[in-house]
Image 1 (cartoon, helix red, strand yellow):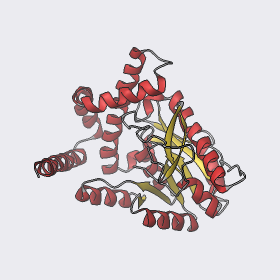
Image 2 (image 1 turned 120 degrees about the vertical axis):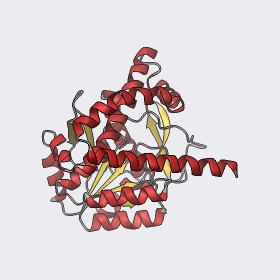
Image 3 (image 1 turned 60 degrees about the vertical axis):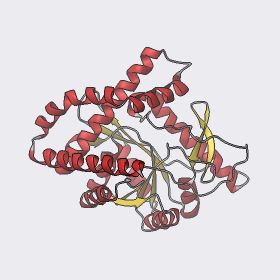
Length: 319
């Protein structure tokens, strides 16, 4: 009972902090917000000890044999700093939607790749990760006129989740909640059949009951199979989509690769396993190139395979 009471108090505090900062971001100019929150990011890094330990643990699994502890510590600090800046941008930019188009832009041929995928007339599946300021990237795609849906794990606080969803809807982003699973699958398929963009984050831990195990930084990682199954059912093209912060600036580039073609194998299970691995390799490649952009706080290898032959099912585990 005490544990439930404690959770209730903590959620109430978080909720009122959220409302306070939402109000503050509406009344202050963005330049003032940046000055006010700059020092706060350093404080938050030292306060969040548990998350910091989790991030360092994940970094050691991924890079422990390749990088020194000093290098890993710097990546960890940069990761927290980027996450904090991203959170501030979300609060400020959703209050001032014009800033989204001012600070985000397509990189190189990225827009052409997205337009070409839409011309296939089967909907588009965007494969991304908790990488860079991905929530603002989703809003940017919606603001640029693309009918965008994102599979999102709802907040534990139902009241705040309603506010989040209202904000996303106001800015043109459609929400597909990751559970209940049946509803998620139905809504996802509907979005694709309506010839819209469905973005799935494919970098979170998923157990063997709802995914497959593939190699990720040399370790077996439980990974959702949903995007591959959706592509097999609908014929929708798969596009890797990422966003990169441009140095120390507030500007971001959205990188969209060309159509990722499924490679067919002898069985559906083999096709799913093989293509989930290939997409995971792409995500790992971006993380290796820009390690400070990924959320190392997540326990990516929490689930462990019990046997070599885990069953393949529709699995979606995203935030």
